[in-house]
Image (tube, rainbow, N blue to C red):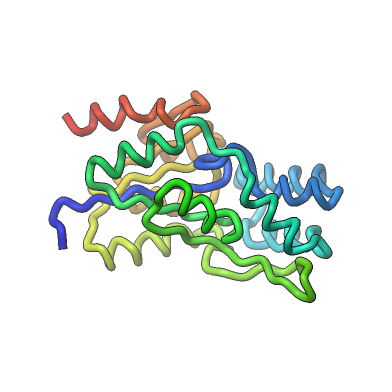
Length: 215
């Protein structure tokens, strides 16, 4: 195993991708406002993430799988997403994303961005449409922290060698295991747990801070 291996973990929605996947799906179902309100409260830490996720996904029932796939594969990337991933790879990082969102999106963009892995939830399909149910290992408020601890153990990477970037309350749990904790255009609850705060909506804005850390 490489002794200099480092790990960078990015949230997906509103971090690598510009927006919330579930909001784009909700718009196609005509329930955009209902879902957006729940999303905002969940990311601000006002609602339990698991219950909010189930509630939001239930509103997507009936959306054609083909339409959901089309939406998820045409999401807008955050400015600088490609550049920050390339920058980290050049410096020996394994780069992955953890998402409380969905594999229809993360798997596609993991290929686009050249990520080393993606961990997210699965939208259940019945008879070619979304059933309104969801499953996976990223469904709880502490899921990202649990997964990060597992991944660090598997790779032999310490907290000091770990960088995490996110924007919402469900990213707090992974910050516990990371020495470098970046709140990107984030809710206040995550800023309070961060040691780097980026307010510019461009992931390239993170590069100077990382270069300074390396000195």
